[in-house]
Image 1 (cartoon, rainbow, N blue to C red):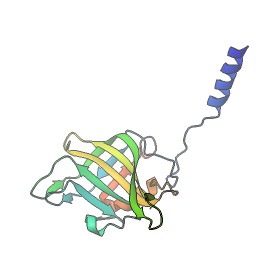
Image 2 (image 1 turned 180 degrees about the horizontal axis):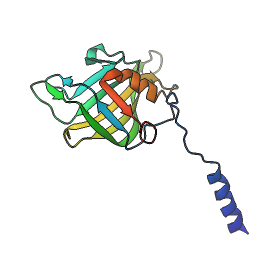
Image 3 (image 1 turned 180 degrees about the vertical axis):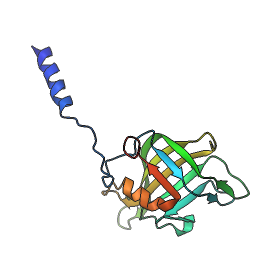
Image 4 (image 1 turned 90 degrees about the horizontal axis):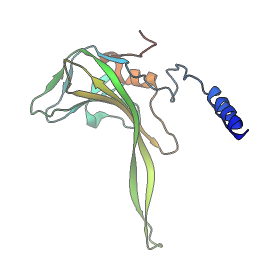
Length: 177
């Protein structure tokens, strides 16, 4: 009898699960594996850097990023003393992940003999691991913004597309094919 009840409970719980619907504006929707990221025009990576940054549809320098607004960076595995050019290509998203980085600031209290850490900001990052036979040194596209710890603001597909502008076309597997 207990086995039958256990089996029925498992069946009931799994029947409540549903396939995640496509909604480009949902913070819960993730880019599917096997999606493609098409680079439409060359991207220049400055000397001694391994990243190219994008915000509001333009390539920008790191110092010009508004970190509280959605932005992305293309990460490569190589450092060079010369500019690196990433040529137009189609990159396959072979793995997707999410991460966060906590920014903690130390607070000193005059009346208390202790230090406290204030965790006030978190960098919420969507990571799209990329592969290309022609440019294997291109590792990933990371899209993020800083937010309050209570917000959990992972970027939506729409925000990623807005950050990348016409530099990239994101084709979602099973949807944009």
